[in-house]
Amino acid sequence: MLAECLSRKLIIAGPCALESRQQLRSCCSLLQPLGITAIRASLWKPRTQPGWEGLGGESLELLLEETLPRGLAPATEILNAEHAKLIVAALEKYGADSKMLVWLGARNQNHLEQRAIAQILAAGPKNLTFMFKNQMWAEERHWIGIYEHILDAGYPRERLIACHRGFSPGMAPNPDNLRNLPDFEMAMRMKEKMKIPMVLDPSHIGGSRENVRKIMQEAQKYAFDGYLIEVHEQPEQARTDTKQQLSVEEFQELLRMINGEVK
Ligand code: PEP
Ligand code: MN
Image 1 (cartoon, rainbow, N blue to C red):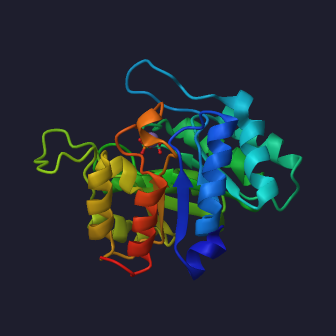
Image 2 (tube, rainbow, N blue to C red; image 1 turned 60 degrees about the vertical axis):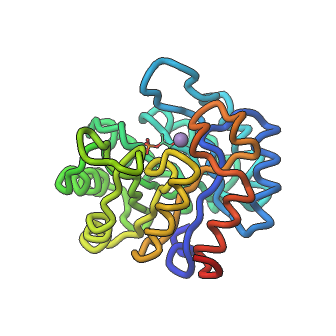
């Protein structure tokens, strides 16, 4: 997975949440012909207010079955060490070369849990990649601290990716009504300091389809190594993040932008 990041942009695309086998299957069959090899479909959803929390660990097997045998790498957020254990154990069946990406979300800022997760993933297959997003509040020292905890817990830097998903707007001016405010310059400084690939999540920055496109346009001026983009076959039917998930056609437009074919 990291090798791909270095030779060309790593694109992780797919629904915010795994909703059903049918949803994942059709998403894979639409995205794979576009050259996408990493499919996001989260099993566990942190929620700001009580609501649907995702299909959970019971659907981990479904996620792996619908992706790995097709040569696709599944990608999901994990919330705790128990989730990390479930994933490492489930991957055993698929062999030492199985590819998967798991990430730590912006709200998951208990360093003890971060370290426990890092330790468990370090013992997983070599193509199991760990990505960590920035925390909710804009502070360089905290973001780099997550990176330090992960490495200090014994996770290898060669299998680590950072992701910028913007910071909580709070009272800051926000004329475009973004869901989270990006700091592209900080992301580039972090990439330089941490010496690992830096992916951008325009979906959780934008918060709406139109904003996702605008953020991607702006991001083209910076050296991001890849993108994490929410795509849903029927965005208006999505169970989470309905406003920001792109249709496959809208996503194709972004791919043309990334490839420099349109502005
Ligand atoms: C997500 O990627 O679906 C997600 C919940 O992201 P974040 O941690 O950036 O809010
Ligand atoms: Mn989401």
